[in-house]
Image 1 (cartoon, rainbow, N blue to C red):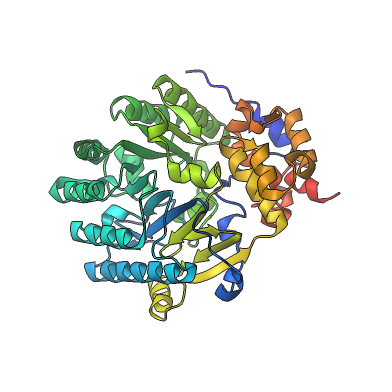
Image 2: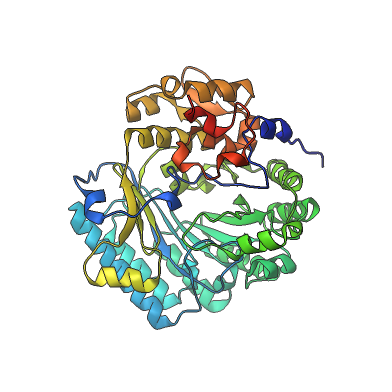
Length: 467
């Protein structure tokens, strides 16, 4: 299968792409791990919660069967039922604290993601308890979709099927399986505890329960991954698994969470064990081509689906629609009416200690500046489905072109963005290098790598702050 790599060498020479296999995804702006320590009272000062605003909700379940090579977040492995039950009690108390802070009886989400960690690491009884907590704290009458993340090994057998049925009966209509790879050696190297056979069985379990949509996550660029192996993985997902959607992640070596994963140390010690940048680009392009052949279309960056019913409404809420996001649980993040903040991700004990004192568990954050607002209103929509110039003007009271004229001109010159009267969008070339394009709009304080990592060309992201 021939692939088109969009002349990456030209863009690295121009300063768009950092050298040394460096990569940093835009998940939010400003980047979540870069918030400084923040006092809860200062961050929330003046907040007058508007329940009419579109609001998406994230629920964090920080438990897993293993700590994966690539994981940069706080997770807790093989915890006792008592520890998990205590966490669920704290989660319920946190929801109550926020309802009191917001002055509402229930929070009304437009979409919800139950993530982790591994939500299905809970027992059936704990799964039912979690669902009771959620229905006690939230009004789902206007919720377009509830998604739950799963790990294949946790939804096998009678207990696994029982957990899935409890989730379905409580409104979960889409499940996402953290598959990551489809060969046992790669799964072992990643630190996963499920096998390729488990994946096949887990898909069968999810289909038995008849969720509206079943999606999987896959990772490319890990040690031992080759374009040939990746193509086989993609084709297996499309044909043998018949997925409704998949999300394709490039391996993240640079930490983007509270706890640096083992992958960073391994890359520094054994860089030759990892695919080259050129091989990674081939794998990325294979994702587009195999997805298209299988009838899946990219509807948000790196997310491919068979149609709108299979899309992630949670993802589209906070990227395309610029909805507020409220996160609950240890290490969750939130964006509420001009406030960015994170819950403590230090440990379960640190989270519980604050909750038991009746204190909201915020330990970092900031009040959004005008500059933050402008960059946030552009970066997230542009990365995914394009910036509506009308929406940008309504959000910032400025136009896209008067706010970022040099960036737009330079990116247009290199065929990375295109615009008309209504939208600024990425071209096919821009889509391929979406994360690198988006860093062009970062404030220099939030750029993930130092200036020395980029060639001194006109697309060096630091160049916009030197004049």
